[in-house]
Image (cartoon, rainbow, N blue to C red):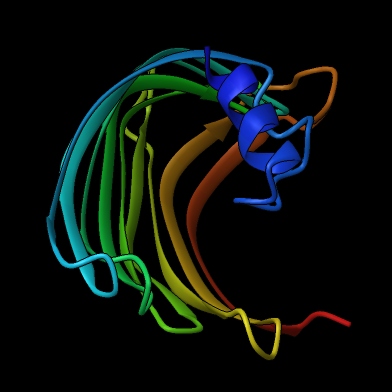
Length: 168
């Protein structure tokens, strides 16, 4: 029960995770730990079934993680064959990145449209220290289907967006 795990992590002070971040999901994980208590190394994989979060529904996803959590230096790859993001059906969702001390580097974010030829790709970085985002997004042939939350219809032929945002 992923929401229950998040509650335990939050209540025990292990992680500062917003209570509403994940509302449903079952986690099955295999994590191997090596090294010393002062410098552990981890490697593992996980699957999540029925993941639900605000604007996100994923029936099944797989994740792989490796690195040194106390430095922190971690590499993560997440794949989901299908998902609903902001009411839009997508396939071939992939996120790959690394956490290196205070920099979260998103090396690859990609997704295909569920019922068309549309494709979105992105990469970026977020500094945990300065709270600065740098993101580049590119989209091709993406029809927009109106939903309650996003009442927009149309088609994105080609778009490229570069964002540099500092959070206060």
